[in-house]
Length: 299
Image 1 (cartoon, rainbow, N blue to C red):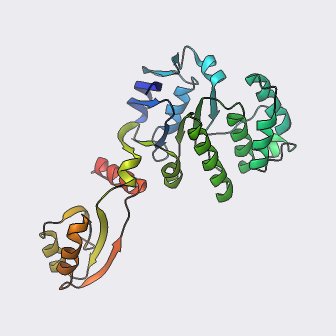
Image 2: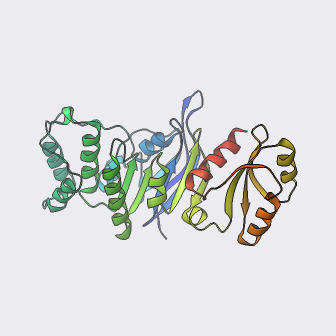
């Protein structure tokens, strides 16, 4: 598939370990790709570089063949964008702002814009400066999607939304995916990324530490169990049992193991003589992958 977004060795150094460093990945046409990391990990810096708001120190970004810095205006004309911090111009009401956006996009028929306004229950007659955080976010969503662009870049798009409106946003993103649109979004809500993304890029301290595809957390054949032991001796004996240990904590005498279907009966037989405080099934999730990979980075 054709690469629509290409980030190659992006570096933007703000000093004191802040920024992004030698960051590279591609997004193919029709993909939905997520970016997840802690606050300050470099998500917004990456996206602002993509949109041409800041100049990278090193590296290059192209979007649909355009250089993100040299051709920033062309990118802004063709990409639906939601910024991480919403700051509207002083144009009065939401209606005025969306009409200005429609003119910028060259939209004559406002049917789809009005459909989005209805979906998100947006009061466009309200003054932009007096809008709540959630209402501002919904206005930004309508502005980004109203032209039905082929590429969407969304920085924490569900910020300020209630659960019902967050579900509406997820449905909207999935509809774009069905239409073959390309979507890149950052989020700290793992369920949001699981529900929408084909791949998720992990960023930590400004560096890409891994990329996880849907198949890795959707169809993992092993089962994962967290087991807590009452006695230190029994905990240590179990560690020698040959099971695949994913995580362990010697102080609290608990561990997490991965077993396949053939190992299940043997696992429960081996646990029977032990004084077990608890055993909990833990499904593989995107959050599990992220947490474990970040913990390994910090060791």
